[in-house]
Image (cartoon, rainbow, N blue to C red; front, side, top):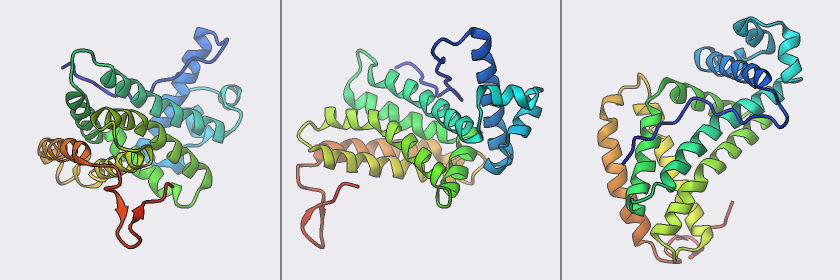
Length: 228
């Protein structure tokens, strides 16, 4: 199978935008991402970005009138890069659904070992607890990221109802993302990520295939879990 890589950003061209304008947008968003990764979310200010880009503040606000608009565009560019990589896996011709599912798991875990991912996501996780704007963006990021996972689960187990499939996708996504703090970039268990990939693939593929409709139940009430 081909090697799949998640780019740092995928900037979607603006409608009617000129190439020069597109280059400016990408330069600004890359600067914002670098600042967030190296210094934290609070350091992502319009002035700091202008300095990093060697631009005047007015040039930054020309593209992004407010910080919220810039942050929204940054989050969108980050998740679009994942969507592109995930979509390439889901449409990889000549491979079985099991192989594509395992490729997705391995890609997610390999990406966790990068400095960008190890720094970016925990930073916004913490902020999401206190900032409604960031919380909404984070929820959107993961909702979109789980879309391909949901599709592959449906192929592996067509009988599984949608709400149960979504719950399984959420569980797998949360389990994989949770390794960030232990095996991410410069973390103590980074050297064991290959092992963790093997464990995840051997655990989740059989799990998804073995589930029957109604298996996922709240033992306290003996009913399907509510959809959140």
